[in-house]
Amino acid sequence: MGKPRYMTIMFVPDGTESGRTFRVRRWLLRFVIGFAIVVVVGIVLFFSFYGKILTRAAMADRLQDENQKLLRYQYKVKLLEENLVQTREVVSRLVELAGIDYEFPEFPSDSTIFAELDRRGMAVLARSADGDLTVPSGMPVQGFISQDFEIGNADRFHPGIDIACAEGTPVLATAVGEVIYADSDESYGSMIVIKHNDSITTIYGHNKELLMGVGDKVLTGSRIALSGNTGVSTAPHLHYEIRINDQPINPLD
Image 1 (cartoon, one colour):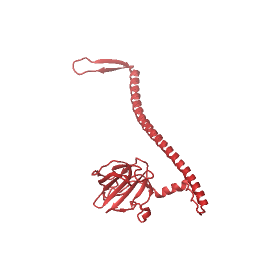
Image 2 (spheres, rainbow, N blue to C red):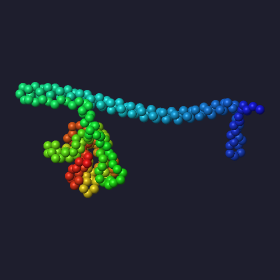
Image 3 (cartoon, one colour):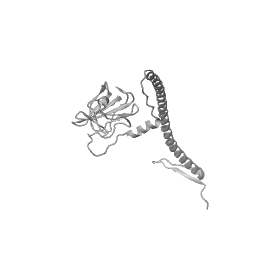
Image 4 (cartoon, one colour):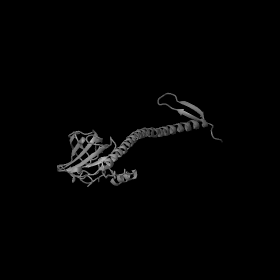
């Protein structure tokens, strides 16, 4: 006896209503079930890939915007370099006319500049999970250290470190504490000061925007500001200080 060519589907409702019976061909039922499975799988795959496409599209737009900013910076740097070369030539002629024996140092090559950046290394927020959370550890932003700590020389007094980074980079608290100052300073620009215990404070200067106010409690790694180029500053960076009993110490120590 061969396989049945038809299948019967019965719908039996609750109560006294009579049920309904449908008689369909076996191959048609298989086709409908298979088609439904393909549709469901297709919908799942579509939304899965569609989400990735949207993410990549957003990333592409962001990268394009950053690329435009880099092109503008590159153009400005090129203009500054050309102006500097012209200025050197004029000063060299004046020096020659004045009879002064002086020779300008050559511009460092790109490889020399990048080697210096590699030597300084990147500043990142990293600390051990154990230990006193009121003691600052690690760096508040990702970037390159563009100026070191120096307090022994009165002409180059610099009681913290400068970390070069793009404007709008999140600035993170390096320890638990309370904000005791969040305002504009003539030198430090938009500045925020956190008191961590009876003796230790940290200072974050030249910010674009402050995200905390006086009296706010902060945890280690909390976003407290967005880096910028305010106050006495020649390029976007964060000025970071650690003070013990109001005496600056080297954050890299």
